[in-house]
Length: 259
Image 1 (cartoon, rainbow, N blue to C red):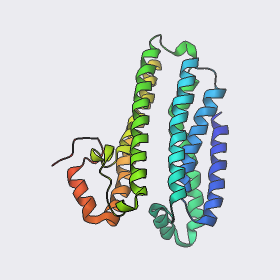
Image 2: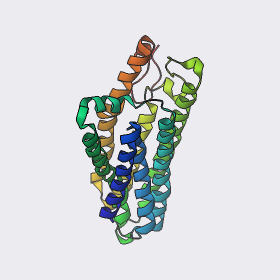
Image 3: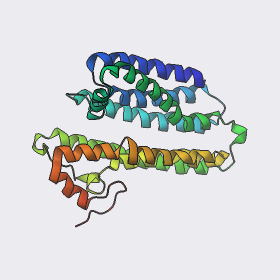
């Protein structure tokens, strides 16, 4: 099952790489990443029949919907871009004449990352019904509440930012409305919160290693792919307006703004 999913992920990424080689807009990799996880989860929940039905339904519907919504959001953002995402434009310049092979390896690496972040759901689906504790429904309820809160929070944050940016009057200004008044990155916060659902559910079957995923996602968002780049781009485009926003707004966890 895992090898088939990986080959499928690799195929999607290679198709995207071919397209990106022509349109020079490598941000498509983000769309493909979330799309592949969504399909991995939905296919696995449909085909793998070891786990109890309520676990399969939860992962297939809740997790599948989570990554499907993220795919739609990223695709909408990608479609509205008039030029390549700065991250990938910088990467293209750094690679120079090796950009095609460099991006090929990058897209292949993303296939491995898809499998890494699909692992919690796939592992939970592989546990037989006999191994689930009698009290697993309690863990399932807690995980469902976490995903619901995270889903609503991230959806609202993304929509608030999308509508703010869609208003020409807000050109060059920082969104400090709604959830963005309490956190500079509420979308990242709720993305991180979502990853707590799987280790909590995993406690019902002793999968304590799944607790690495909230830590891993926090490291990615806080230090690697998320916040550092977003902050750098915001300062470059909005300058003092964003510096003022930084002084009064929490960077990650939603908190009351400073006066």
